[in-house]
Length: 81
Image 1 (cartoon, rainbow, N blue to C red):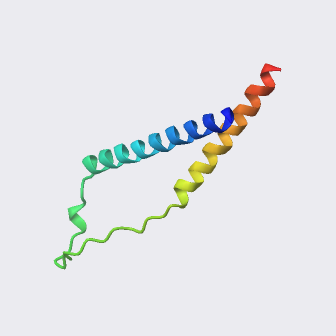
Image 2 (image 1 turned 45 degrees about the vertical axis):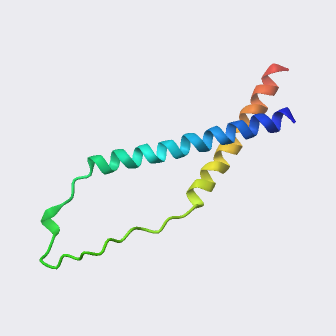
């Protein structure tokens, strides 16, 4: 049960750090963005298009974090023996 508790704490802290990192990198990228006005034609559209989002990269990162957790636990346990 202790292993599961440590895993849950690890994953929750990882998810929290991941979200904070994503927000901070988005803020930084937005603050440093410089639009390219040379490519603007007379036909300027007033419609804003955002790209599609996907949960797949987050799930992949979560899977890698889980594998890293169990691998580090296995190495740590085998090095203590």
